[in-house]
Image 1 (tube, rainbow, N blue to C red):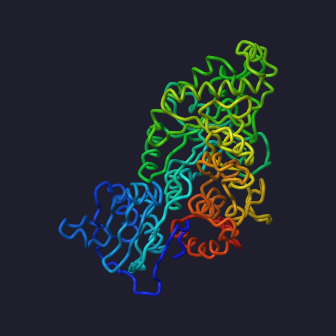
Image 2 (image 1 turned 90 degrees about the vertical axis):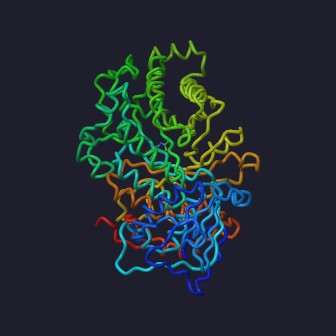
Image 3 (image 1 turned 180 degrees about the vertical axis):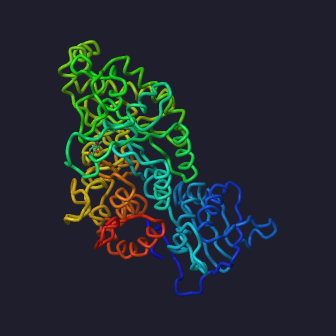
Length: 530
Ligand code: TNX
């Protein structure tokens, strides 16, 4: 049935007569299953035209689709596990938890066929399911994608659409990169200039270096606080956690453009700075002062209200690629190094991160940062996103810190997926669909005790050269489908994984992506927007 990601066990009788749905199937939603029932009525209802009314109590056992919670399934299949059974009486979905049940509903939709992913029913379409069963549960608890909405803003509807696409692939973490040199994308009431000024970037001075579209027009946009609340609620309904990222102390020129006092005013005229109109890493970084800490505490206070702990136990503080030249040149920064007794500029960086580690921990959250936060000493409770290869993650996990693997050599989806002249913007390493499929989140160097600290992995989507949804889709798909299988399924490493099987199943999965309206990269071209 071309299921992606591959379930742990599936015994489906495609040769025998299927279970055929009538025109008005009935749903029996057991206790605690209301969320998935609502999703089925909305999403599957749109594709099939079914209203899925609740079964009368005396006829509950005969309902076409029956939803149950069964925590005992967790013992074998883990907390997100589920079981599907299909026979002549209909289909029963049982989840070890509400999340497990929701993943079961995603599998049900895949079993119904590509058309079950459309937004309106095709005339005359009838629906059936093969008899049999599926038992499934994920390998990792952190199955994520990072979306950079700073370099190019993705309007709210696009983010909601991506949450649906993640859920369709049983991915459960959306890391939103909300701030960078090139833009600040979240409304902060007490610092309104962050979006009044920081969300808008002028036409570039830099010529057509990276992408023809980067330079053509001014660019901007931001999410209001209500937009964020909506995004978070939408994600929560789909069992997707959201990790908000506010990048400090580097990648901060947009904030400094809005509030020049945040910068190193004794070495640059920060009042003359605008939002950065190039890509790469700006030298304009935050000044290491108490006032800057207070300013960002204010930002994080509002952030914690918008991202409740149930949806966002982790808060990302960036910490990547902080150029140290201004701190070296600044008398004030050098004075700070002496006052704090820290080890030079790296020590200053870790002072920033440690401050927010303690601050977030006191509020019941956990800090996560890019692997540069290892430099100058890792804050005690911090988790690490290992992006510069595996080394940072190996060091952090060895020292007992939790790790999310996202090595750029493997899972940076801004990098090109083939070497041909027709690829939109040929940046980074060539990472084919097969390369992503062969990504292994737990490197062999890790001892079993250290490997426990690998929470999972995420694919990162940096958008310097992805100006619109079509470009994002093209870079992300179908590679995200391969990634989803890596983090969900227990793939046989020794057997070279199941690349051939995956490639065969991808034919069916591409039909689902088409039905979903995803501009995925076709195996042999042509490119969708040409
Ligand atoms: C490195 S990964 C970055 C990003 C860029 C990306 C481009 C990381 C923490 N920093 O700022 O967008 O490379 O591939």
